[in-house]
Length: 127
Image (cartoon, rainbow, N blue to C red; front, side, top):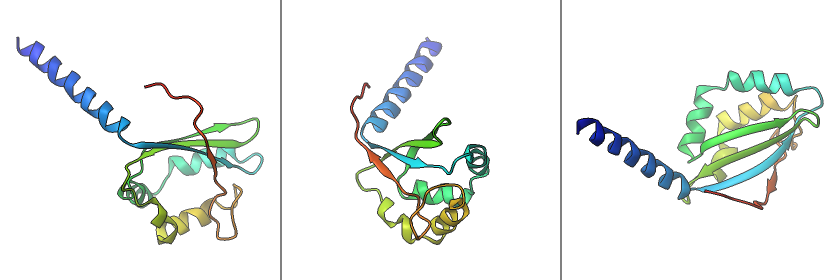
């Protein structure tokens, strides 16, 4: 009986986490690496600054993934955020500005080093 109750609690916890994720807005976008910079991009993200992770989480960013299409050096990113996110304030943050400067030599950026981001429209979703 105790094992059954523990299993029920685990299923209930997973169900609650799934509902929480579905309540978040999901966005996808594309960025572009400079040709041949995929390995360097991966290496820099392996060593992502803890203060940047904290900044992103504090802004409401969660469930964030970046994928690479190596033949074209294209990046595809997807993240989730709550309706009350503060991502619009990220460009004003010194940590974000330093990260962009750190990445500017390996990807397409604007004059302020902010990566050029192309929003993507969702064409399919399955929960």
